[in-house]
Image 1 (spheres, protein in one colour):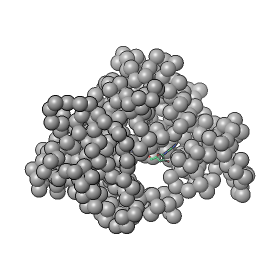
Image 2 (cartoon, protein in one colour):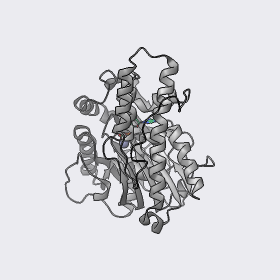
Image 3 (cartoon, protein in one colour):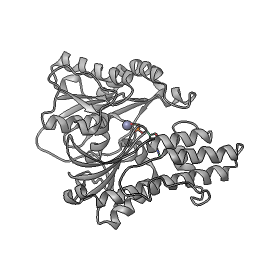
Image 4 (cartoon, protein in one colour):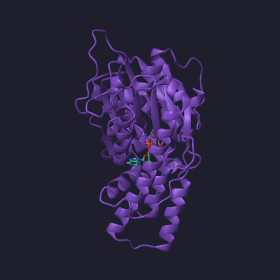
Length: 373
Ligand code: KG4
Ligand code: ZN
C-alpha cells in the first residue's frame, strides 16, 4: 500500500467523560465502501486513535466507486490500518476488550475484508466480537461526539429517543431512534438517496467524485434562486422523499444548456439544486414532527448523520427547524459524518453493553435495513 495515501484523522482534543473505573476499549473496523478505517474508542467517549485510508483517489477517475477495485484496495490496506491504529493508541491487541466491524450493509467484497479481519482477531484472542450494522454506526455516533447549537460537545444531549435524519450515499431515511437496535422508520426515499443526487448532479457538471463536498462549496458562492428545481412530494403529506425528479430536472436543463459553463453558472446551479434538496428535507422532517409516533415518543433532539450531514446548508436549516420546534439540534463533527472506524467502534461498544455479541458465525449482508435489527 502506498502509505502516503493513509490519512490519519487528527481527532484534536476530543475527550470524553472521566471515570474511576477502567473503561472498556473497542477496536472498530469499517470497510463497507471506499474507506478502510479503524479506531480505538473507549466507553468514556474517548477516541484513542483513528485511521482512515481513503480510496477516493483510486475511484475518482471512474467517476464513482468500483466495487471490485474497492475490495482489492481494502485487502491491501486493512492490516496496515489496524496495525497503525493500535500503535497510535499505544495499545496492543491484548489491551482491547471488544472487537467490532461493519457486517453490512454495503459493497459485500469490502464488507467481507473488514469482517474477516475482525473475526480473525476475535478468534485468535478470544475477545468478544460485535457485528455492527453500518447504518447503526452513523445513527449512534452523535452519542459519541456531537456538536450542538452552542458549539459545544453535546454528545450527552443525544439521549434516546431522538429524531434522526440519516442521509448518506446509499440511504436517506427519517428514523425515530428509541434505543440501541430500536429504530422506527418514519420516512425514506422512494428512489435515489440525497447523497446520490449530489454525486450525480456533480458528475453532470463535470465536478468529479464525490459530488457532495464540491456542490456544497460551489453553492456557497451561488444564488439559490437562480434556477427553478422541483421539490418532489413537498405538496403531499407524509415523510417520504423522492430525489430522482430533481436529478432529471438537472439533466434536462443541462441538455438544453450544454457546457462550457461559466463559474457563475455552476455556482448558481449548485446553489439552486442544493436549496431544493434542503427544502425537501425540511418539509419532510416538519411532517415527521407531526407524526403520531414521534409526538408520542416526544424526542428532545433532532439529529443529522451520514455523509450528507456534512452539508452546511442542511445543517443550518435543520438547526433552525429544531429551534422553531423547541428541539435541540445535534450533528457529529465533520470527520465523523462520512464513513469512519470510530462510529463502528462506538456502535460496537453500545451493542456490547447490552450483550449483543456474535455467538455463532454470521454471514455479512449487502442489504441490512436498520428496522431488521
Ligand atoms: O456516509 P457516507 O460516507 O457513505 C455511505 O455510507 O454512503 O456518505 C457519502 C455521501 C456521498 O454521496 C457524498 O457526496 C456525500 O456523502 N457528502 C455530502 C457532503 N459531503 C459528503 N453531501 C452533501 N454535502 C456535503 N458537504
Ligand atoms: Zn456510510
